[in-house]
Length: 556
Image 1 (cartoon, helix red, strand yellow):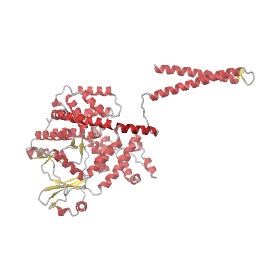
Image 2 (cartoon, one colour):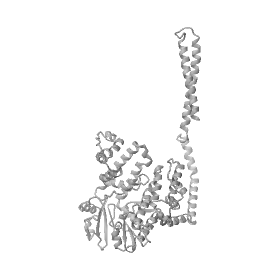
Image 3 (cartoon, rainbow, N blue to C red):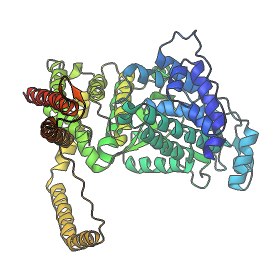
Image 4 (tube, helix red, strand yellow):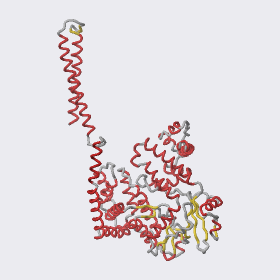
């Protein structure tokens, strides 16, 4: 029923893809079966022959035409540096969510239902002309009764139903891609869509974004140089986020930055410090620190805004990141190899080839000084090696890698001499020292001891369950033995040769007996049945000799 409900949207998506030169991809997906199961037909349009643009450009234009959900998908794909090459990432980064503003009268009705009274009654001033308009929400300025300036980030009406419909379609298309193109399964298209759906649903809940604000405000409460806008909780809910208005220099207006007399080099250092603290210390980071989400303030302070997309790193994952960054900074190929092997999970990898590629990669950097190393390029080179070996980044690291690359770009925009690697080293050293401090080792020891006690304590229960399963005949043991299929084939061939040998022996004996019988038809002066039996036995013997000779040659 869900599929039938979404067929018009699927048809629209197919036509847009064909119009941008991806009709052959749609045909290979065999999407016609979807319509046939629903009792409909699908006429696939021919590709527009005028397409001369690169495929990544056409993909970006198709996503833009398909609307907010697909624009957001493209922005998420821009974080998948482990799946797409740099030229595709660069094109996805051009996707902008700016769309025409919704008339404020429609927002007024939504806000009145949410607050129980008109927004014009709640604010002394309310500008109905938005200062920003994106695919999910738009932003308006207002003034609280106490005179403080705020902004209202208001979710567009009816956007949830539209996005949910598109998410269902995306899940269906991802399932088709995995089924029709087995080689794509290593990149887990369905898993990517599922993670995208979770992220987008969180972004739709503006109250969740407000909670993200509060978390970052707590983490930077003692930092005088980092500003996180205050949230006004009495006004905030899932459809509107009301926060303090931050007036300053937009991060993408460098000319105004110069006029304000701010220190660009100091701003680059403080911004990098803030993001590295988010990643390596707090494990909770702004996943999109591009210039549009940064405001520069007097006294060289920095305000971060728009916390709709955030990343989370548990402690074990932070340890892996620290190990990787330390190995990259020290140009330790063995350390990089160990981390990448941990990320392969169950994917088979040629370890020797991977080690050789990493050694060649590090050779290109060993004669460079730290100030000459471009950290973003360093990460991109590692990711290119991962793509070549089909190593997919763990889901919680895709945002991180993109954030690190974006961070260096932001730093160099402010200060062309900004050096990420030497700036990163003190943070890595600080985390490493904290990891092996006496207190940290004691906590780790207590945790390991408790896990051991828990394991031993649960052993009788586990054994009891095992015995009960065996009694009920439900105990199953799965064995995965290497070369087992080959061994089975050898047994099958041996049994076939043995059977044919027995049949041949029987034919020889039976034919010999028939030869002694004078009655019956004759062939070349001999009993016909005996002669035919000997002839079959002869050819069987030749086949057996040839089969045994070939098997011996293959073993050599």
